[in-house]
Length: 485
Image 1: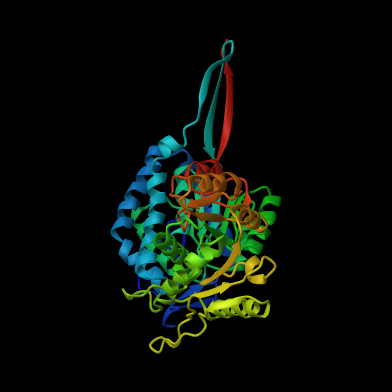
Image 2: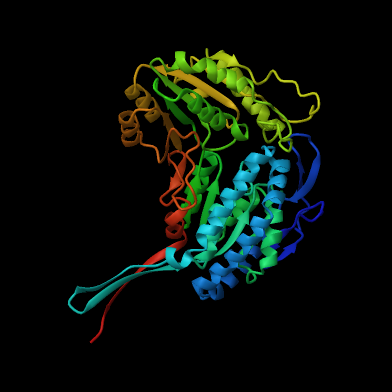
């Protein structure tokens, strides 16, 4: 990455310094080391970017799909060569371990790889003689300019959920990275710049609320993708949909893991610990609630706490670290508030992550793994997304009670069951009512060629991300009925 102390936008095929005087400092959350300044761009800069993308659309739309794919093939090669560089930047700006960062970059690139198959993914259907002498076909056509508003928790990966499919389908695109973690996108766009997409096809603009509102308000934006908290997702969905835009807004989560007494003890505990505390709990697919059925608590709880207690906190760039910091001092304070509230409401604290002392990293935003039991559905900690390394345990008598407990949650992102019983697994799969489910899998994250997205207040929209759903979101299906005399 270039050593510019202030990041630039990428508009119409080139990097441009923002005209805004507003800047946000980016610091390493593990060390508080200053990394860069990011501009808080203005609405006029957004409108300029949208105009460039709109002007690029007609020629890009008419570029054959195979030619559009070739740009992505070349970019994938460059990205593969730079995985380690990007991962290091992700760890510095976000705090997650290098292993976690590396894995997230690879998962992101898989979307580029999948989008390279656009010549097959975008194909329509046809049927001859739907009636005598009448044929019908469907064709998929791009819609124009799309935009994505990305979250802080996976700064390199999440944008790849959207723009590769959008531009492969013939649309043009604008990315707004999270202003908290913009550095990895800067290095990715430096690689994009080397590929030399036609001007205006893929753009990036840094900023905050004003940029988001300007993207929603601009009539030349055909659709918006958002990943973040439920309140913001709901707001963006309502506002953008009211303007006739396509919207996919991914919100928060409160993910359950149901643990049956017959589960494989070691493998189940390893999966739960990795899911709950990986990335410091800052991921929408993290397990935050465990429901232990019958004798499961007596069998597994002690070992779960023991394994969690052995996790080592520190700078994610160090090889022996299991858990990095949370994103900011503000977020750490928020997590501690929920821990305090759980104690006041009667939850029992088994492991207190507030009591840590990292002498070598006194300015880092660290909070250790925290585990509660005796958590009831009425407690705040059972209802609200904490987005940190906090795990709650409750006990029920049977699988039906566990499933009913999951149904009561307003969230519906993911849910897992740990069992060795095929009947339990099938019953869970059939009845749970959640879009992404795991069977003996702690993080039920679909690969790029399967749909990604939740239900209830975890997702607002009709068409989700990844796979064939992405092609549906970024294109319009046109039906052609023809008869020749």
